[in-house]
Image: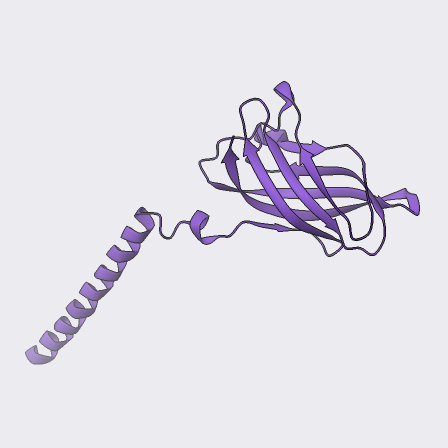
Length: 166
């Protein structure tokens, strides 16, 4: 009976040390930022099939924080964009943190437009310091078709972007 107990104990000790080494390695990788979601997740901008997000830029500058979005119309029809609104917990104060552009833009089919959402002075987008290098923003685009401007529609999208210091 003693030999079976010794074999079982050696088995457990061998695998115990191996598991401990694996946990230490994973802990070290996490400590040094190798397993950080900021480095693993790519920047992305997604909008429904009607619009294509070509480019984006989030800039944190003292006085005027901005979110720039370049949109391509792939809907097959001309449209008028009335508002592009960004909401996030990284826009302070979080209770009503949003940033938008309310300048109407006509966008022909196949054309692209660059929309910058900001408010100057004290009404800046006011990007909060979340401690993350990448933040998630919800995008809401309000538009109508040029051939029927009486009805407005809303598209929802998402932006995961690195904040650049300006």
